[in-house]
Image (tube, rainbow, N blue to C red):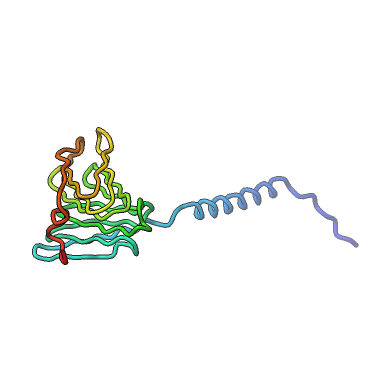
Amino acid sequence: MPAIARPRSWRRILLHCIIASTGLGLGLISWLIAKPTATRIYQTVPGERLTVAASPDIDISLDTDSSVTATNSQPFRIEVLRGNAYFDVKPNAAGRLQVKVGTVYIRDIGTGFSVSRRGNGGSVAVASGQVEVQVETGTYLINAREQADFDSAHVTGQRVISDADVAPWRPGR
């Protein structure tokens, strides 16, 4: 005697569709979520200097008693926590570095430049190329062989300097 086929229940079909769509949705969400951002800290103690390759195209030289954090995000982000740092950016990484000093953002435009943090502000000195300094009142362009002081709201004292004044503490100068 042949088996009698039972009609499928809509509830069972709906339940299976919900389970499948939930699994598909979770898979899609996990695929869309970016890889976690890794943050590294580089620091020196008084009397010590350090040069590191933060990425294949970006080298950081730290003065004594200085510290920075670096993330692997795009654009490459570095925050100067204290002291002085010199950034050597290779031409193929131009425009892919952003430096934060307090609430001020400095974007490289294919350069070598130094940043000094003091209190609520600091200064930037450009060896070659250009940087954009973004403060509350606007964005300022600093060219090669220029230095400028900044705080969270203003860029002041933009002036011409010599190559030796960009990062006088840097080894091998």
